[in-house]
Amino acid sequence: MQIDTNMEAFYVGLNIRKKNSLLYSSYNPNKILIKNHLDESGRNLDLSTSKYDTFILIGDFYSEPFEQAMIDFFHVYNY
Image: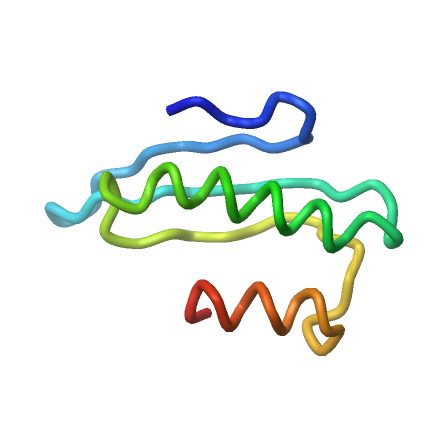
């Protein structure tokens, strides 16, 4: 998988009970950059959709879940 190397993030593939999951963790260092950060995260996740059954998303996004950028991201990825 070709990922964006400009982000502070890591990806770990897991196989639990015969399901492939991707653990994705990232750090967004600046609140102003949340939309860009989520756009890049989304592009990186899109590269993996065919390889994994589920995604586990963790990290410090420097944003609240009710902020518009997060709402949009959650909607696109059905979180």
